[in-house]
Structures are given as C-alpha cells and as structure tokens.
Length: 121
Image 1 (cartoon, rainbow, N blue to C red):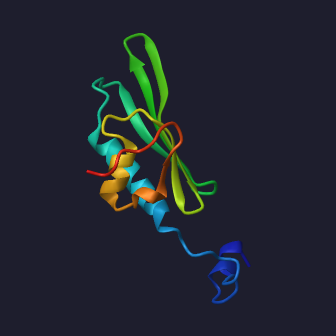
Image 2: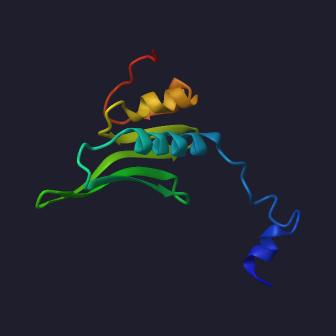
C-alpha cells in the first residue's frame, strides 16, 4: 500500500491534519497577481513566484539578463507565521501589503518587519 492510499482512507489522519489557513491562499494569490501585473521593463528579466508550502515562505524572484549583467534579486519575501503574514522584503511597485489588503487580508494580520504600515485607503 502506497503512502497516498493511507492518506486517502477516511478518518485515518483526521487528528493529525490541521485545517487550512485561509491566509496561505490569499498570500499566494496576491504574489501571483503581482507577477502578472508588474513588469521589470526589461524583456530579458522575468519575475517568478516561489512557494515553500512546508515552511509557509513565499518569494518573488527576478532573474535574467540586463545587457551583459546577470540579474538575480529577491523582490518580495512573505512568511505565514501563526495567523499573521510577515513581510520581510518588498521591492515591488505597488507593495505586497496593498495587494494583501485588496485580497481581503485584515490589516492586523499583516506585519511589516521593516516599518509600520499605513492605514488601508
């Protein structure tokens, strides 16, 4: 029997499984929206959303070439810790917090690790 057969049996893992945190999906959708809307202005530099589902860390990474110069930079780093989204890095145009607000995340669930947040508009 494979591991997925065991996981699919009813009530086998019901005590070990924790309910999904809705902030996880909101953070991933907000970062995907940023990738879709923000462009670097350089066709050879691409932005990727990178999700670590096990540790709940979410990144936006820019990579590519600008002329002869290699570009690799973390644009945004968000982590889900408890019931809060911690923004460690934000080099986006509109800001990750603004996208999280727009997605429906409450201001008290967002922690900027480098500054205080302005109130939502």
